[in-house]
Length: 346
Ligand SMILES: C[S@@+](CC[C@H](N)C(=O)[O-])C[C@H]1O[C@@H](n2cnc3c(N)ncnc32)[C@H](O)[C@@H]1O
Image (cartoon, rainbow, N blue to C red):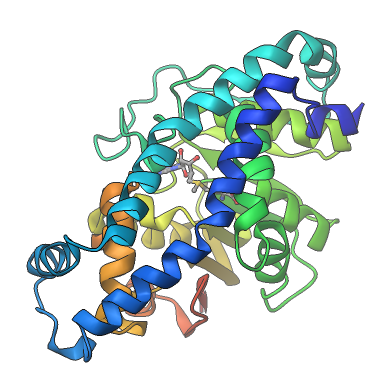
């Protein structure tokens, strides 16, 4: 049951399309090398690149416009961006009837799912096609399509370091092992939440997430594993939970999907929700401050064309400073990817 639930046996057509996309991403290494060689010739010293990020994009596009490898790389990236969500959804369509029993079985508890049909999503999220997969609430089974097909059958195959191993390593960084009530902000389909559960098996795990479609998958995953999660459709930066009702508040890779004002509110909300002595553990993408100008250009360009409208603003922030402003003490920031910020409520 759990295996069928978590690892869909795709039909031949869907499997071939998914494999093609994953192989295409893996095979692009040779082209990337050619592009890197062309970049090294065009930009011998990255510190000479324009400071302004829009000027830098324009400068690099002009410098590489005649490079075949660059043009091919952009075309492949664009095609991948446009097609992966559609291919994953079509592959799901072929197996959806096979999964109906497993879904029904995984809806019997012990986890609780509390949806809020009145919730007004923020403008920075509503209708945005993050990663160009489609908005997080754009498919009634987006949690399954994204969590099981896009993530596990495509991204996990070419992501350096392994997306699930990284989550387990980050979860284990919190300083105590006796947490009683953990909140995971932006829990999505529950990948990091699962790592928290396995790392702190005695804690009550609570997740908040805007998209009911993602939460539904987290809920079924918890149920299929016998985990008693409490999952709420709520805004991470304004949860409405009681003050001091958690001893650990976490997030994994949600902050680059938020503008600065919402990020500041999220850290303040984490502070409010923690009891005195409670810990905060947030992780996100590489800070622009930790890269040279060329690496920033690559990340910024990837974000611009990869459906990440808030990445530039978010990756330019100093989360440690924001955490201190929210009131956290013993703040430390470390790691390139993911970049991890920890702090304690005094
Ligand atoms: C990249 S995913 C998070 C990944 C997840 N933590 C994991 O380990 O796979 C970002 C998630 O955050 C959710 N999200 C974005 N802004 C949010 C907000 N303000 N409040 C709650 N959830 C939010 C999105 O709907 C999406 O499901």
